[in-house]
Image (tube, rainbow, N blue to C red; front, side):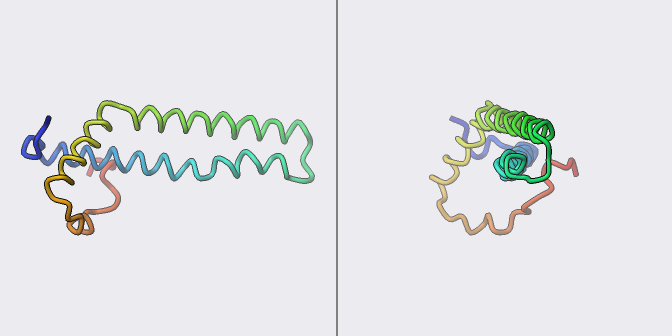
Amino acid sequence: MISQQDWDIAQYEAALAHLEKLQEQIHALRNAMPAIVTPLISRGTSKQQAFASLSTAAVSSATGVEALKDDWTSEAAQKLFAKSDESLKKDPDLSKAAYVQQAGWGSGD
C-alpha cells in the first residue's frame, strides 16, 4: 500500500485535476434526463425533429455516462480513492480541505 509520504505535489495536483474532471462529468450528466424528455413533450415540433433531438440527446447522454464510468473505474481513480481512504484513516479531520482551491486543477496552471 502506498503511504502518504510517497506522493509528491505533482501527484496531489494530478489527483485533484482528476477529481475535478469527474465532478465536471457528473455535473454535465444533470442535463441528461431533461435533454431526453424535452423532445418528447415539446409541442410544435414534428415527429422527425423530436426523434432527431431525442436520438442526439440519448447518444450524448450514453457517451457521457460511459466516459464517467471509464474515468471513475480507471486505475488512476482507484489509486486516488485508495489514497483518500488511507489518508482519512490516518487523520479523520477534514477541516483542512476547506482551504483547498475548488477548481482549476485541470487547467494546467
